[in-house]
Amino acid sequence: MYYADMSEYRLQLTSDDEGLSFLAIGWLDEAYPFTTGPTPVEFQERLLEHCIRGVHEPTLGFHTCQFCEPQGFTSDGRSIITKTWVHYKGKRFFIDNGEIWIPDGNITYSAPVMIYHYVTVHHYRPPEVFINAVLRCPLPYEEEYLAFVRSLKEPFNTDLFDFYRDSETHNYSELY
Ligand SMILES: [Zn+2]
Image (cartoon, rainbow, N blue to C red):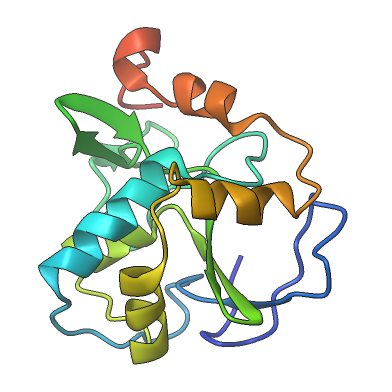
């Protein structure tokens, strides 16, 4: 699913966005070039908190990274791609399903949870306005952020979803 950075983004599952305008960030696709460059460590750290603990709009199934090299090929020639995961507080979490929301005034940025992988592994550099918004944004478990989430009609309990994504709890295979 490709959206150009800063293009209008329509939430798919949440029914009421209270008049907020959502803009897409980091919905990359191998068919389109993306900007690369260094990003501040504090930005990466705060981004990770959102990608683990502030996940919204989970869908069935998961995405694989189009920029990672295949780990091999099946007998009928299909690529074997490792599921994308990160270390967080000593555990492994998959970041391959759902999106994060970064509110910034009247705008909210929507990015796939895989954006952390794109930034740290593939050196994707999102627009400066998004980097600054992440630096300013409260962390996803802080009251100010929770109040923002409560203002939206989100049909999921994301606490349960966090548990679902805990790869050690569920002992998922790394490959599929
Ligand atoms: Zn990758």
